[in-house]
Length: 275
Ligand SMILES: [Zn+2]
Ligand SMILES: [Zn+2]
Image (cartoon, rainbow, N blue to C red):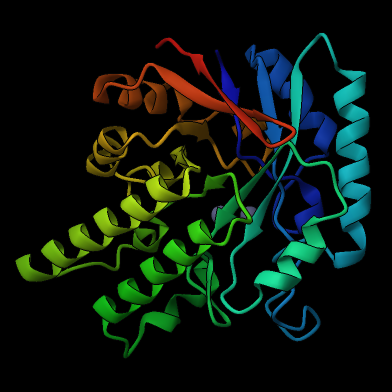
């Protein structure tokens, strides 16, 4: 089974291409399932005052879902489209997120921690946020938020679990490395306990950290804990759809995975994959 469960498009402001261009590219690549998963509109900062082009305007959300559903029907029999969203987990905003998501017939929802307060730790324009910070205390805050996202009941998939490493900020001593390993393992246990899946997000390969989200040792622990995995390219350009997913499937296969998690109507099933 060839799938890509993490994609964006022009509505978010920092991706290019219309939804249908991603669909066409998915067909050209021979994908059996393509998940559309653009960013949740910003809800905890004023979009007029914040960094521009972070996410689609709130008013666009119904049109996004409607277009996804129309394409799902139009391409039925050619490619299986799945209607999703990469819905930021923002601590303290759980009820607002729940209300925003409630009206729509999602196939799946990815819970991603991008924000620690108003700081988007994944935004290349905001890396100055690390200046003067104790890296380990940022890691502790980050993994605490990921654990809360898993426990929130809002999501089907934890997005890019160790994305905090994206810009290369990380532990500098053996003690700190050991603590990060412990934070990762604790978080995986919470995810396993919550019964939801995780993604292997290949986009980290092209970022300063130069490895996928999450790293190989985390994937191995996820397998041991029985956490199902799906895969996503996090493409922000139709021509980048599926990028890194051959490597992602190989990594999963060599770790011992033989099935991928797929979703419809928020019901998860496992399908075999090959490399
Ligand atoms: Zn994006
Ligand atoms: Zn993300």
